[in-house]
Image (cartoon, rainbow, N blue to C red):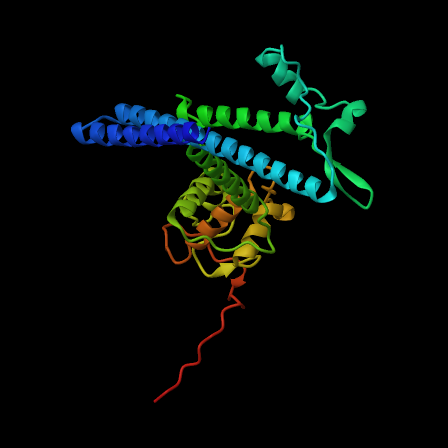
Length: 314
């Protein structure tokens, strides 16, 4: 038995070496191999190596089981001889001598190995505090789960690593990253939608200001002029403001309007992000000095949040 196992192990190792040598020679012989052929060679290598490893592992596990059984029998014989107990010459077999291979497998792994009424036949030769130990097999449900786990693992490896299926852990990672980018974009859009007069800030990037200019010319120019010079509404290019000239003041006026002076509320027609963009654009009109400016209205507005730097003389 030992000689046969050694031969099988040697055969598996030799097969593994031949596979690696064949793959190396194939790749070196075709330096400009295309991607498809390279993948096919890699799949053959992976499958062959996996089979060789499984053979070696199966032989090793079988050898370990036989060795463990031999040592267990030796310990059992030693304990029986020490206690003056005579062991039966043969262990109880669950199957009948005439059963074929499938009947033996069914009785050993799908049915209760030893009925309760026959437990006396598999009592080991020692006991602890009156508790006798049975030389029983593993529970069938555990063995079946272990077999199903092996089958599932082989199917998993074939589906995700050896088959032509394009799905892989790399593709799953890429898909998850794309979904995360979409979620981040939605979160950013949500934060933009939550802008109000208490937290609005001035936008300075050209893209946002261009969008603000377009909105201004579409909805604001009718009352304030195409260049902000003022017509029915106030002039945006001078230093005078009626309701304040800060970004929060402008956002609030755009959002709620000034009904008593004909300025309507735009919160039902413009998103908060759009109101922020158009308010930021209006602030860029100061000092542009367009023709046909309307006369100043209101008072000169000074930003109270700006701290003046004192000038020291020499």
